[in-house]
Structures are given as C-alpha cells and as structure tokens.
Length: 270
Image (tube, rainbow, N blue to C red; front, side):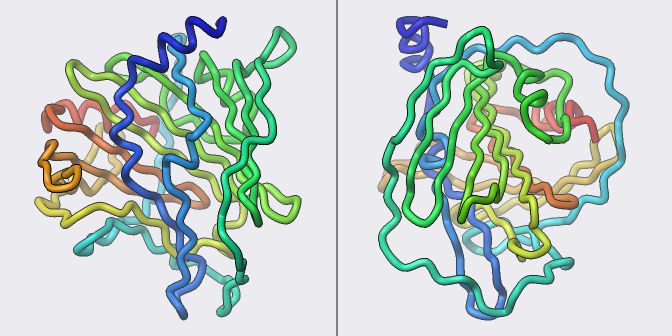
C-alpha cells in the first residue's frame, strides 16, 4: 500500500472515539492509576482496509470477569491480583516522541511500524492489512473469524518498560451502516502482578443490562451520553470484560441498534 492510498484512507475515518481513556490500576492501596489515552496507544494509527478470510473456529468457553459500573467508569477487578502493595513510582512528564517510522515490505507481515519513546516506557505500533497476519506475529487469542460490518482498521501496540514487554494491545475499528464500533483487546503478560483493575472512563453510565451471546457468555452493556464540550454528539454503548490475562471492550457508536450490538457480541469466538 503506497503513501497516497494510506493518506486517502486516513482522511476517511471518524476518530471521535479517541476521547475515551483506558486505564489500569496496579494497586488498590493508594489508588495509583497509570492512564494511557487511546490517542497515545494508536497515535501511529494509519487507516488500512482489512481482508479477513473465511475460517472455521470452534467456540471456547471463557470464565469472564463481570465489570462493576460506577458514576464515571466501567471497571473489571482482578481478584487474582498478587502484586506489591506499593506501586513503582515514575517521576517526570510523559512524552510521546516518534523515534522510528518504517514502511513494511515483502519480508514482514505489517504495512507500517512506528516506535515512540514516552519516557519511562515506550511503545511500538504495527499496522496490518489482515487480521490473521497480526495474530501470526503476536501471541494473542483469536476473538473473531469475521466482523459484522466493514472492517476499517487494525493496529497492534506493544508496550515495553525496563526492557520487558508489558502488554500487547489490539485496536479495531469497524464501520457498521452509518455508524461504527471499536473493539479493544489487551493482553497483559503479568496481569496478576501488575493489574488489579482495568477500566474504561466514561461519563455517567446508565441503562445497565446484560446479554448472553450464542456461545453462552454473559456481557454487561451500559450507555453514556457523549458530549464535546457542552455540545451533545450522541449516545454510546460500552461493554467491558476480562478473562485470564486478557481485557477487552466494545465501544458502540450512535445509531447501532440493540439487535446489532447482540449480533456483534455473537461474532466473538467465546
């Protein structure tokens, strides 16, 4: 994919979802929160069109952790957390400096690679034109064999600290009719030592309900009114779930019906 095509694709995406923030809390004692905005996690996110081939995958039952809903977030608590009571402190301002920007070739699966220095941690974003290629490069569970709607973009972000990989994060955007939904999949390699809870920061969630998908997995769905400053821009729906060292979310934008949300949750492999 050449630069002109990438720029055309980039200009056509609705990036309003970037305003939300995914956070993880690595201790319950002091409430220390390390927050990495989605804008940082996918700052290298050039838009690519994906092609997902037909695959046969059998559903695997997962023991999903249920989220709790508060006045300003939806959060999953990891009861297996065994980390230190006192978090590691990292003084200084977090930066976001681009240190590498490489176009892919025939020798690699990815289309583009961007690496960022953020101070006490760093991250690298890999872009693909195929979901399977991303899974071939990283040790991630397959969550989908197909996506309801038109798959628009996928990125895999690898976060490192002190020379060690901390987590793999996948961000997928799918166009659905005149709307879209976003899927996040994060694998923390040592979440029982580093992540006591993981949340999606939203404003005044309401209308909490559950849906059990065709594979028998139960999900909590909540709504939130989205504003840009004082301007109302629509109602969004969110789903947050977790199992093992994995944490995931769905962000359904305005005009996706409840039936369509159920269809999308049914498309999961668990």
